[in-house]
Every structure is written in structure tokens, then in C-alpha cells.
Image 1 (tube, rainbow, N blue to C red):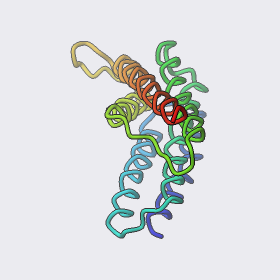
Image 2 (cartoon, one colour):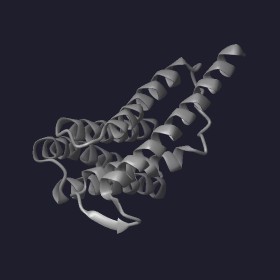
Image 3 (tube, rainbow, N blue to C red):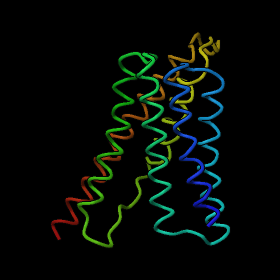
Image 4 (cartoon, one colour):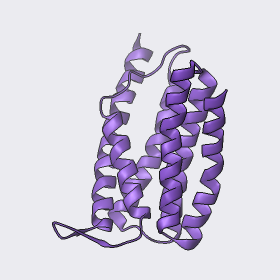
Length: 180
């Protein structure tokens, strides 16, 4: 399946991305890899839908690659000490949310899935933007006097709040399905 091959290729790019970020720090090359991996995430889904290749395996591979990219981004930024404390806490919430989601999903009765939260897409957008800005070379953007680090921290904080809200929603779904 072409879409699964794209997902696997995307996942394989995460290790060199982490290495660059952890040992070189933020810069154009890690940012380019981050954006490429994110673009391949969009591409694998479009290819799967276009070619009718959607499958349970593809969904699991996609989810794992997404989680690995978040973990590699956060870990790499932590290794180089590039995040202020509020961004670190926000980034840890993003990774923790992924682990909590997987745990809650395993608590559901077989054949059940979560109803997607409407906050999922904005959470992904803010997390991707925040991590991308944190990975980018630091420079003043001149937008209201904010630099890219302040904007990254703000995006990560918003993503963290949205993550907590989505987990609360999924936890409620788990509780209500176990009550039945």
C-alpha cells in the first residue's frame, strides 16, 4: 500500500530529525525536516483516501508516527534546553495527552472508538505551529513585538489547554461507555 509506505518513510525520518534537533538545536534544517514530516502526514491520509487504502493498520501506523513526531520534537527541544518552563510544561502535557488517549482507548469495549472532539483539529494546529516556531531559528518577527519563542510558547500553551479539554471529553466517553 502506497499510503502505508509514505507513513513508514515519514516515521523513519523522525530519528534523523530528533538527532539534528537534539545535537544541533533549532535551525532551518530541523525545521525543514519537521515540515516535511508534517507534509507527509497530510499526504499519506490523502493518498489512502484517494486510492481506497484506508485500513486499521494504516490508522495505527499513522497514529504512531504522529506521536513519535511530537515526542521527538519535545524531547529534542528539551535536550538542547530551548524551551522556557511554561513551554516545557505545555509540551509535556502534549506528550502526556497522547499516552492518556492511548490508555483510555484501550479501556473501551471492543469495537468502540472515541467520537472525535471538535477541539482536536485546533489542538493539532496549535501544537504543530508551536513546535515549528520552537524549532525554527530564533529571530524577532516584529509582530506586536513578539519573537518566535514567545509565539511558540503561546501556541504550545493553547495546544496544552485544548489537549486537556480533549482528554476530559474522551475520559467522559470512556466513563459513559463503561457505565452501560
